[in-house]
Length: 194
Ligand SMILES: [Zn+2]
Ligand SMILES: [Zn+2]
View (spheres, rainbow, N blue to C red):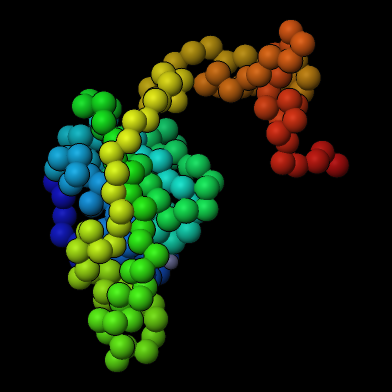
């Protein structure tokens, strides 16, 4: 079942290495997302229902799995590097999804609420615990088409890249001039072999 925010804060601090405003924001974001979807036990009974897309790799990102249970290695956490403090929570059973974006003015609200707290991180942590969901986030219902190859539990034979010979899972191969290539050999390589 869902826990109270302070309990999640303890878990987030352990997982992330420190407690910060980003952790509070990420926890609040995930709680709001699962609440809008009507899920009461995302990391337990509902764990096969939820897939989360996250659009930034920052402090808040680490807090999302604490509430949702969605992890990269379970294929239930999807990273789209859009550089936005935003996440989309998808309910696979109901076929619906809600996208939340952190409001840029939340920092200004924190400053208004607690001008006496000089430390910005402390100021924001306090405010992010107390502000309403609507003050912290914009929400919008969206449609997310998740292909079967992107779902947790997908099974298919791996294929071999015709160029480097490495194995490719989950249909990530591309066909170029009739050859089966991995995405690296097809031009998306982020490293140069030495
Ligand atoms: Zn942090
Ligand atoms: Zn290859």
